[in-house]
Length: 506
Image (cartoon, helix red, strand yellow):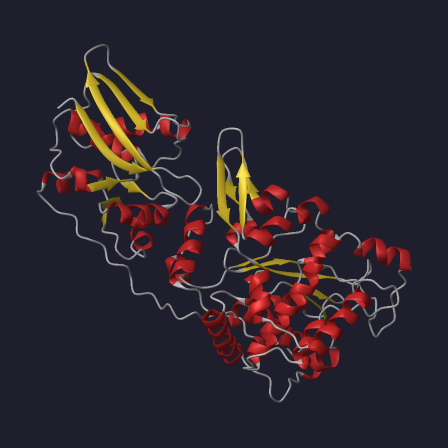
């Protein structure tokens, strides 16, 4: 036959839309044309495909070859279409049979010798193929990643000859079974390694249990980063759906996805010199930024005031919506960005305001100017603010609290609390909307009066009030209480206090 049709997949954000690769051989001067909005890397596949066919004892047809990648208005990029284009040419020229190809989809980059090389985004492709009820032929290096999707028939191959033999029926490719990784989440950092800081550990436990955003303020070396790095070790395990979403984003990123880290919470810590594009994503072909790479995990911003204010302001919408939409003239891409924000900062420019050494010489105006780098709207989206004091004696003597819990012990409490929220709300407490707050976070008359007083004293906004109530609900859940009690509300309010003489953040 002179026309062959092969099914493949493109990449559009974390989606993998179907691409029909149509190959037509016609009379005329020999030529090789690819149409259907191909990028440069797709156009270069002509040389890879030609060499792969010739180096494996096939004939490259001396005809006018037209390859159409449909739909024509969807941008195509990468070397993922090498294999389907090569198969289309071989089928259209009658060198291999087309029998059974309608039940397969193919994807993979070809070397000049015909070996299959891995591609980015194999997991989104596997998710999409599962819905199509077809099997997926792909490079063997992507097999473990793609096989994580239950219900997808993955048939990995090392060479184009293996694929041709499978299509012809002479040697069938076996369905790949995912390796049995140890999916028990293991973290190399434990909260029991932190000396003292019981107040900060309590705040981290509340933040992990309810998915609340947290700001830590303290002098340099007081342990803020050490505490933040151990938050993933006490967070509840991800569901299969959450794990697949997180893995899909990692799969299309430059870093790639490691199947052995399946279901582990992500911890991202970008440098304060990062641009807004690096943080939220973008580029001529929009790629995910740090907030999407931290989806269902932790985004840690150290030295918060050192970030460009414009960069920090772009966090406001994703913190509320849990997603980011990147718009360009040619297309629009949406990435999930349901992350937990943990931030750290010094209390003043020199960093030693309130330190026991009394070495701070910053003026009140300098302190206000430094802390004003964080806008009010962004502060409103931080559920909790705590002070982290330096504790040199505990470090020198290597002393811990007698009843200091390990991350495993704390995670058990957090998981029980999280299950309690899911049973009642269907979501974490941080995701409660206004109606949910009215239904599940009822306050007594005396507690409402207490909150009213705090609202006036601390100049709280409506959003801040709701966040205090959500934190109180989480504290009540940790105490296995069906109702928010006064001690739960007062503890929640203590995480928003302003305590220093300049009436600033701490």
